[in-house]
Length: 101
Image 1 (tube, rainbow, N blue to C red):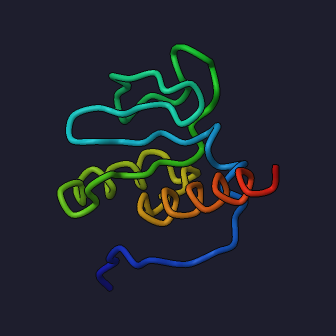
Image 2 (cartoon, one colour):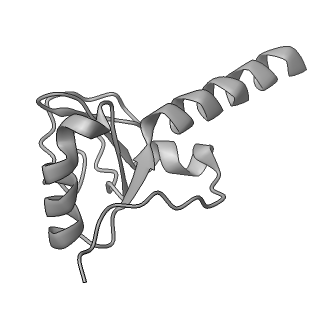
């Protein structure tokens, strides 16, 4: 059997994901909590704020497929989050808060 990456949808509160999210770009990542930059993918905790990275979002998933396979193998407890979904939901939450006040 050949295992491939498949998206699986689950309900999560994006406000609880953000503080523990590593947002990974082309060469390095950024902390979703304190926005610290130049964080390597294998980093388990933010070097600036100390939050544990339990989630990882890739800005361009297609260019990082080999890194995702490696991450899943080395740190199976980490949950891969779709960056576009995360960005859309956090934007919607901010808009909702803005119109509440």
